[in-house]
Amino acid sequence: MVTDFVAQFARMIANYPEDIQVEAHEGDDMIEIILHANQADVGKLIGKEGKMIGAIKTLISGCKAKDGKGYRINVEAID
Image (cartoon, rainbow, N blue to C red; front, side, top):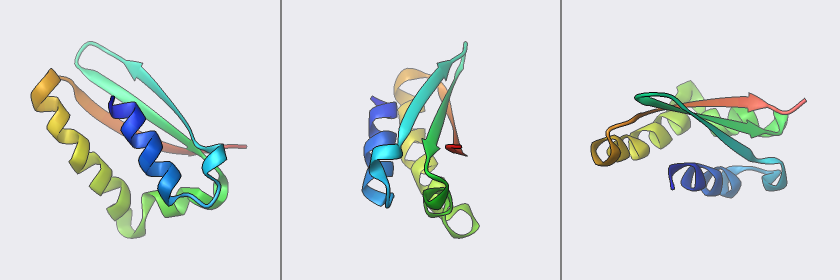
């Protein structure tokens, strides 16, 4: 559910939505979401001073209350 949200949100922002790929690695109490994007979109997804990625983190932090797991998001450029 959260990974689908992150993927859809990133595709709406990106100039190259077809390059967006999301993978999730689940640990005991943390889920790491890795957002792979075109190099041209990485800065756009992070935003000035990290405000865009911070907003995404704020939105998904409500899910922690529901399922008890924390979330970490990383944005990586596709080579």
